[in-house]
Amino acid sequence: MSGDGPTWDEMVSKCEELGLLAKKLYVVFTSPTNGLGPIMENLDEHLAYQNKIQNEGIMFGAGPFPDDEEKNWDGEGMVIIRAESLAAAKQIADNDPMHKSGARSYRIRPWLLNEGKVTVEMTFSNKGMNLV
Image (cartoon, rainbow, N blue to C red):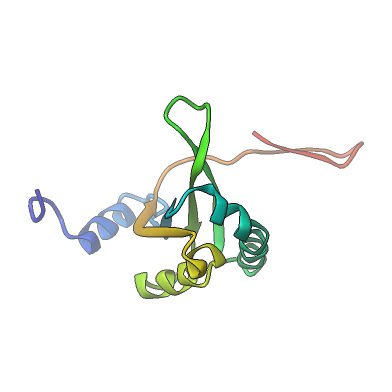
């Protein structure tokens, strides 16, 4: 089916013309290479790295995937990152301790965020916040 539709750049331009957000991001799909043992061994360093790239404004979001029945976690996850290019996104993913150690492998897909809504609810009396 490749080549039947618009190029990626044409798709981005069309979304911009339509007034959509057209925010270019990169999605890193990460999978275990040898079970959960190596993942758990690298979890603290991985989470520290995630915190670092979050604080630097690189990470948009991240989290684990359950199995298809929502019963177990087999070590799969996803990280959405802000980067200037696919090569830059690859460098960010390569630096993740999970990938450096070989505990996980990854695949990166460019993604265009067009639609959606984020609602933040704040309660002043108790300084509470809720993401709706």
